[in-house]
Image (cartoon, rainbow, N blue to C red; front, side, top):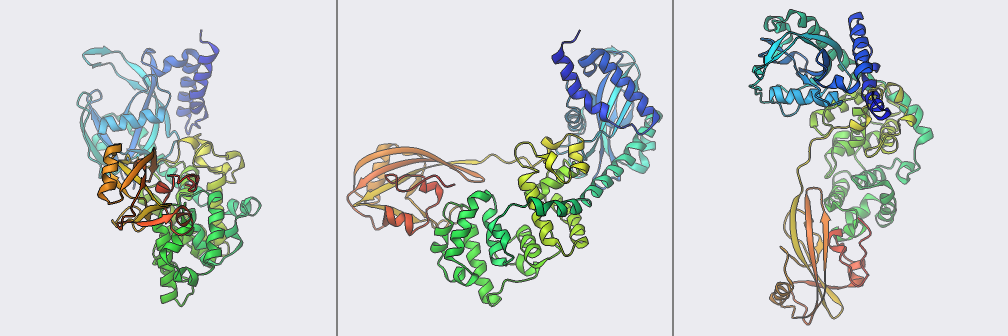
Length: 553
């Protein structure tokens, strides 16, 4: 007899099967039998221990255009068939389906069309031999998901079970499948995958009306939302890239005080701009801001361009920022699609395609453009409503606030309990590890600094002198001597690290008192470093007697 914990476990995974809505009387009968078996034998239904019938999972694999099916030639059935396998104790049926697709076809990147069960069937299995053992006739309680695979994927067989794998046009399945009882199953799955795609498309087209109704009562009061001045909106969008809203507010106000318009920004030096950008990181954005300001003054007489194409052509402005400025400031019918918007779209449609793939962004942009065309007087609000939903409700980390979402009633991920599975992303490469020794050289109250000249990371910014690798104390003193700084005392060593998007730095800081100011460097006091030059966080985290703070990131 199962205890209460076992009963809860069964309840957790069987609820998805119970919530499946049969689309035929046969499916309804099969569902009742499967649920009855679960009620009777619980977890045993997940394993082959229950010989009369147990759960299997299949992936019905189609190409993105849904014109062909990827099938394997099974030794057991002597026929081309879908991919699939036993649950073998797992209650994550979608994961099992994906696993089987990978194992049987060799593809690397299958993704579910949605997390929705496509079909629930009891399938008879004839007696057969497997691994030289006799397997009696039994039933598979089969759970099917729709899977999408690119035809460009390299295919390979699973030799102990299959002899061939190939793409078969939907019109030719009957000629390749020798199991006549499976043909109606395949036919219904093709129809259902196409219907599911249509359902996803329809969900995207439903988002504008509830969002536009929801936004006025739920929008945060942010300083850049109080204006449609393109210079202000542009600045906020650049600052907000990969930076929290609360952190940006202060920077935004200080930057506008220093550079109130595009003319003042264009006339500033890059060092001046960098100083007001200090702590935001990604200094190339600050450089591009100034370059774009110069271009606006030079080529547009100081007036911000009003077409998407002209905005997009400015340095440092991509599709998203151009869409944001164009729609918010000029009521342009072009969406601004960033990670927030892609996440909302992925969840609304229960789409498991990796959202950072370019094709995904193109598809979502095209779908949203239809909504912008349908609401031409509210394009600014629609852009900001999508941003707000992604930032405050459909959260990127942690549990989304589905109960507060205006799209809850038709969100497919919510219906299928896939919120925490989505969005899927391309697996990131591991960061490259680099190590440096950083020299805090002090002479008569001034510290050695220099500008980075090498192209690439932090190019053109100030830094403390540093060399690749970690030096011991004697090697560090020798290096200071080589720079003709005449070190007299090593006062402190510290270990720090700094993480960039693709690189992680391990930093060993050496504090040396020196008797000579080498001409290789510029020498600045603590106060001058704090007020005159922009020092990236990677170097600013090295305290100069508590005067330089490492609190900002």
